[in-house]
Length: 371
Image 1: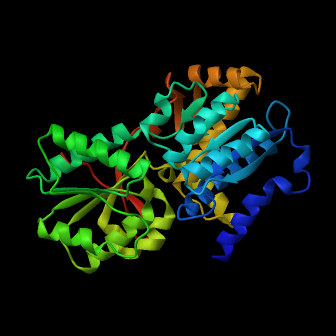
Image 2: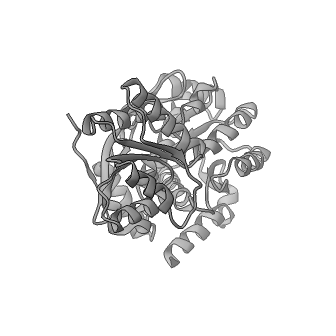
Image 3: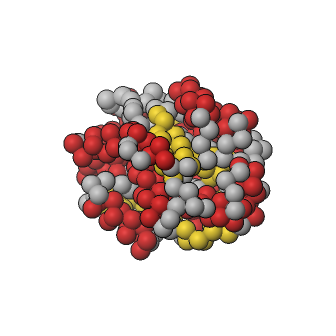
C-alpha cells in the first residue's frame, strides 16, 4: 500500500519536478487515478513514464525533451469531459488515454475539435473508432471481435446452452455483453439468466441464486475486475459448478489482489499477453527495480508512446495532422511487436487478437482453445 501511494504521488506530481518546466513537449495521461479503477490508471501511467525516460535518455524526440502530466477521470464520463477540458486548456503533444471506454468516447470529440492526438492503450468499445475521427488510435482490439471470441468458446464448450450473461450496466461491460448475447442468438442460444447488476456491491447472492435455480453451466460477466472478483469468491466458496468467463478487464493485478485463489476459477480474454514477451518482462523488471508494481496495461501504454514517437520522427514534426497521417500510413516496431493502424485508427497486428488466459498463483497463464 505504501509503495502504491508513493507511486501515485510520483505520477501526480511528475510535471512539477525541478527541470520539468524546461521540457519542450508534454504528454497528457488521462486515466482513473482515483476510484475503483485507479489501479488501472496507475498501471498504464507507469508505462508512459518509463517510455518517456527511455526517449529522454537517448536525447529526446526531435531534439526536445518529454515530460508528462496526469489528469484523473475516475472512470466516469462526466469527469472525463472535465479532464479533457483541463487538458485542452494547455494542449499537449498527445493524450495517452483514456482507460475506460465511456471516458474515451466522451472525450474524443473534444480532443479532435482542439486538434489533439489521442491514443488509448485500453478502451475496447468499437464506438470510439467508428466516430470518424482521424486523430484517434487504439492499441488494443475491439469488443466486437472480443465478443465473438467469447461466444465461440461458450458455444463450443457448452453446446446444451445453459449459459448466463451478466453485465454491470457500464458502456464497457454492457456493450461487450450485448455483443456476446448477439452472437449467442445467432447460434440459437438464449441465456437462462440474462440481466444487469449494480456494480460495487458487497455480495451478488441474488444473481448467483438465480444461476443455481436455472442450472447454469457457464456465465459470461461483462464488468470490471473488482465486481468479478466478488462473484468469483462467492461461486468458489459455495462450491458451485459454474464456469466463469470474463474479458480484458481482468488483466489488471488488482483483480488477483481482490479475488485471491478464487480468481483462478475465471478465464478471460486479452491480447497476446505482453508480459509473455521478453521485452515486456524486461520492462516490468525495470519497473520493479524502481519500486513500481505494473502489469500488462503498462506495456501497452509504453507501446502507445513508442508508436507516437516513431510517427513524430517519420513526420519530422509534432504537428497533429502530420503525426496522425504518419500513424495511419506507417508500420511501427514496438515492445509488443510490429503494428500498424487501419483507416479508423484500430490497431492491426498482435494486440488486435483475443486469446484466453487465467490467473494462477498470482501469475497469468494461457488457457488452450476449445476445438
